Figure 1 (tube, rainbow, N blue to C red):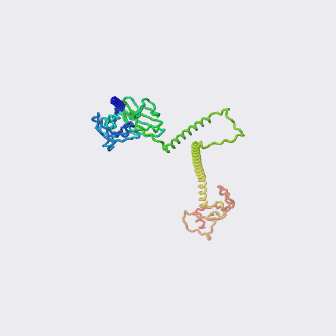
Figure 2: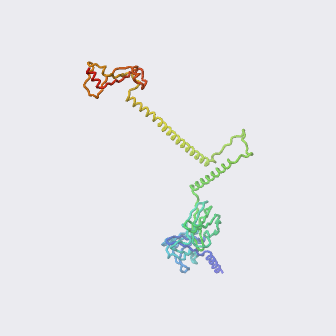
Figure 3: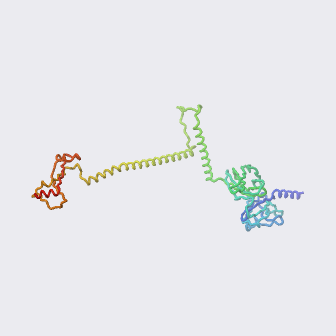
Length: 412
């Protein structure tokens, strides 16, 4: 009777744990398989074997031997009761059936998980860009599962529940599923886990139809820097909300119920520490405005000064040129007002000359000779009317005589 119960128990365990997981990997890629076991098997040997049946399932790697064999390695985490197998540099001949097995000394080994690995040269029907995703406590993580097959879509925790609709929870953590397509028309199942907790660290399965892909999520505690950044963001959001509320309240009319200020009321002290972030931001903003106004004023002052200088220069240029011309004329011609040193004369005809005092030399017939004698202005009034000269100026008139007349006078 006890033997039958043991066989029945083994059959139930086999039925619960031996569901086949179909995994597809591209040639040259790698994959990690997680295998979870019961706490009773913590000290047992675990191994990874390849083969369709028990009798032909050959060892690939074991935890009690060198933990790597060629392209395959195995590691056992007894605290989490999970051992993992990693296969790298996959080629087409690596396809087939693989099993996670716990060795039972003196009894039948227990198969924990059965996988069928497909290695394809093209794009796998279901894959993720990375199997290891990290997040922080209280934050969120996003996993993108790319698929080309059809079937039901699920996000499951290994050995736990699944979320198969658009949203749900796993161990108190919010999970949302969204089906979209990216820029190169790949169909994507986007999984987002929000409000992460430390206990969410585990292996999960992205499943579409019969295919599945394991993904490990690690949740870590927030560091001091992350907390500071988060606090800064929160303060900024609160400040924006306070400013919005303040602007809204200032636009409203005061109500009659508002209390009036009492002359005997004591002054109310304001705690400025609660307004630290807002006050600092307003102060910085005000200083920025003051600097801008100062720069604009200086710029306008420079422009106005330059305009005044240019205008003054253009206004002074004609006067300078006029003064320069007057200086040139004065240096070339004597001052008309300075006439005291000038003597004017009248040219007399030759008949007033005497032969003894002024002998006439033999000259050319075309030459006209003359003499100059002083003459006062009054004697010249009838002769010239072109200008009104100064009374103190002595002018002269010119008397001309033809050469032939001079010769006749000389002959007499």
